[in-house]
Image (cartoon, rainbow, N blue to C red; front, side, top):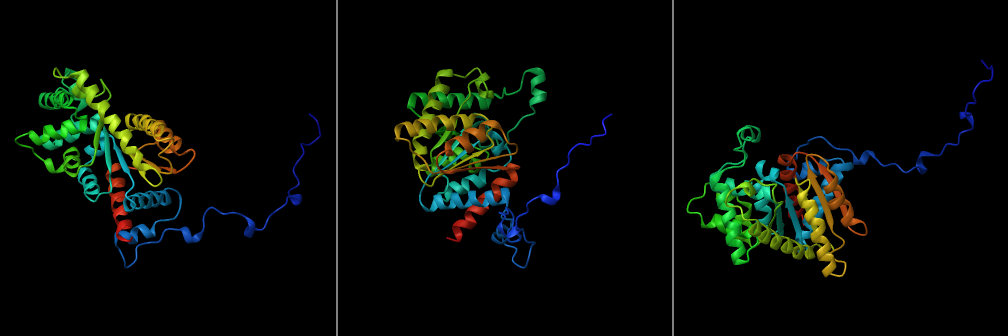
Length: 321
């Protein structure tokens, strides 16, 4: 074995710099503060640390409030889990206040919305139904929605419009007041449904008509593309709980809008809100639309907590304007 020892760096010769000249990402002034005498929701928001996702959360709330004030577009895209976690009333309130200007959803969200409005309950035990082949085979849901699509094709309605009209025509509904699609129709807010053929339980029903599904959902794609024009310079697009369908649809609809609008809309904010972070929402919603302008955020958390908090924060911001 050699007696020669490995070289060591001489730390006595290291250059140091004064901390006053160093850029620091966190300051004591940014720290959270505990509850005090004012326990309002506004005080809670003001108590949050101005750091990482807490900062992003407030920026998104500010962006939506600013968009609503300036009459810019606020597009909310939904996955089915958002309806299943009981958030319909919160979203309807945002539509009633004129904040949401377009509501887009995947097929599962529309199915849950239809079932809750018509029957007062939704979300079956998939594993149990899969054993004997009854998963997704509810007669009334499949027939009612597919007949709505067939009528919608004949009348040149979009899928969301067709479902809203079908629900409105039902003689007895369990809870019409919590239907997102019916509320959107009542408020003249465009509501679109974006089907994934074969991915939704109503596509396995004997009444399913592929031509009607395709026609009404494609009409809704065109309606979404037209609505995205309002995002230009100050709008907001929120993707809530859709890991695949809505991020893909959004990217294509945005391409159409920019193709027809000479590169616009630009300069808008996007945000993905979900329980987990996924590739498509991150790339198609948060990153790619904002390469040259605007801003994108990812806020991760349970819908049943995050969406009410965001809605309250938006309204707090609007009340202070």
